[in-house]
Amino acid sequence: MPISTFSLNSIKGRVAETIIQELFLAHGFNVFHYGMERSVPGIAQLTRRTSGAVKERIRSMPDFVVQDPRNHRLHFVEVKYRANGTFTREEVRGDYPWPHASFVVVSKEHIKCLTWKQLDAGKAITPDCGNLLIKRVELGLDRGLVTQFNEVARRFFSGV
Image (cartoon, rainbow, N blue to C red; front, side):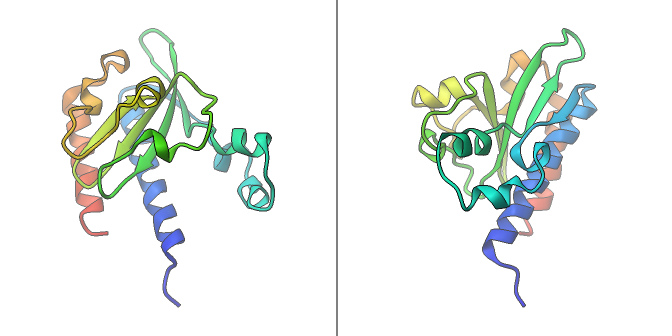
């Protein structure tokens, strides 16, 4: 029996989340799972048969809350895998209730990042944009470490 496209995409998404989780851990951040799949196990199955505002709020939960070890500041982080390296506002359903979230997009070539506010203002992550994660000064990430994790993503995703 072949793996369904849904299953394969779910696996890729989880691998991207793991890469980003490990990246933040390597920087000494505290990383807390926050997304629907981890905070409320089993609810993903239930939300497939329901609709409404509560369902949308639960589905939109960012994947992680990360805490910066230097200043103890908290950040919401939503991780997406996109083979084509593109992520736009249109891919986010309706009114996004987490205005302080950062969207980290892992592709076969790069790890990029925009805040929700930037996405909502019309910016997008594209293969040739300059929104690299290493440029996010508010996160204070080490360029060398980010580059190493980018190489891990590149090696992993080049074969799938």
